[in-house]
Image 1 (cartoon, rainbow, N blue to C red):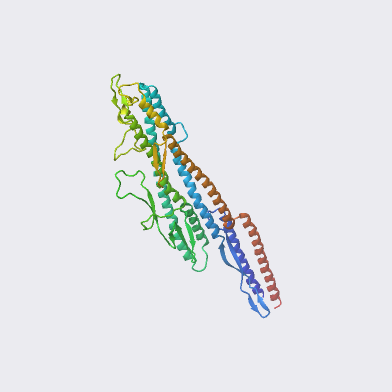
Image 2: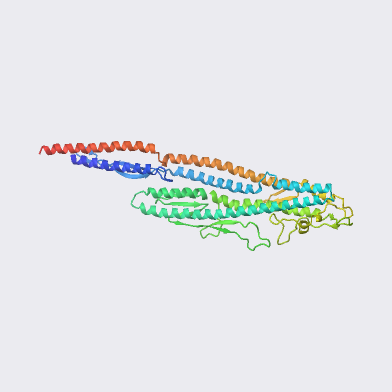
Length: 482
């Protein structure tokens, strides 16, 4: 009898010691990123059948489980992917918005207003050399702003491409890590154990993938996971397919190379573009392929229209050298470009003659009247024409407007996009935080709860020691009777 008590008490001591060790592990890792609370599961031993009934034989640790909820993980990762996408869009478009610096006195709206105002002033005093110098200065200012905007967009796109490449590298790193952990988990759990720490590491990597790539996870019966990106498999068991970033260079290359060659994401050996994308990866590709090229296209449309229409009116005018009559037919105000180097936001500039001599700027439309101002008035009136700029959007719709209105519409649309991305980022971050809180309520470690549990287990451990003492006293009584 005492032998059975010793055995039961010994098992209880060892089991509760293991429980205490598990609690200590939880407390030690309370602040470890990705750690899931563990719980030692106590199970009664198989009883012994006696003539008068079954007699218990004690307790043992059946397993140490990891407290985790797959559905909460999925909810968190979905929200994290949306939050990552909207936050990245807010940051990138916010940086692009900073290029234009509107509204400000140094922006394009002010520069265009001053440019057409300078023509109006020249029309008021068509023989004034100083007024011509002001027109020259304002024209150069408008052209320089177009150049600066285009350069800023180029720099932002280059930065986004570098960031995209880093993101692809990061995704590949996570994918390889998940594949390696799949293999290690499969090897560790062949004997029926659960590799809790390895699973925590894998879940942490899966969280990172969800944020930057919007991946989905499929749990397999053998303990491994499959990871889907878009509609394709990124990780399957112990193997991962790498992502790669490529430029979709037109073939054959057009006579005028495009300013923004689109990029594509490929998976493994597939020749096709990976789609659909999600997370930060989707936003980066969209900004590189659509947002920045769209803004550049609108600026190019404005620059081309400005050069075409200003030159068309300016070449109808005449310039005069002193009081010599008749005057000389005026040339272009802006450089007209060539077939292989057409006018764009990046190339717009004053015509070489106008840039070198403000006297080449025409105000008169009459070769025999230096004081005539019809050309100056016509150029000033371009400010009021609302049908000069025409831009075809990627979906085929055509937008038209005046120079000031079209530019304001461009900047306003960008501002609305930034505001929308900011609102989305706030909303999805709130959803992510809420999902994480719910997930932490299951898998997170509360040191207060662990300490309470530790006190309970200590009491059970102390009771087992008393049971050993009682068994020892019973044995000593038996021995004294011999």
